[in-house]
Image 1: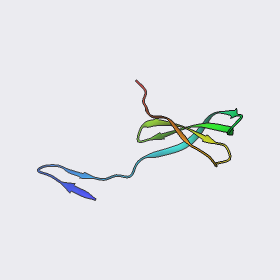
Image 2: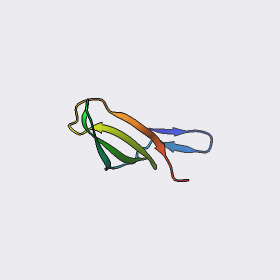
Image 3: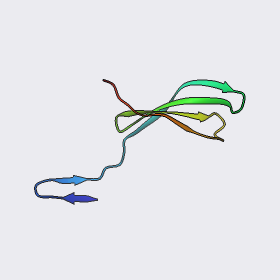
Length: 68
């Protein structure tokens, strides 16, 4: 998709998505083992908390961490 205005042309680009990295694990009595993952998306880091077996609720811990 290309958008042209007076003197500029912009193109819609696909997001830049990096590999997921395991940052830690922990156990809960109700959910079992869970994993904290970090992943860079468009230059910002996203932290998510997911069940190790892949079944169950997933949580976004932080959406746009950036280095100051």
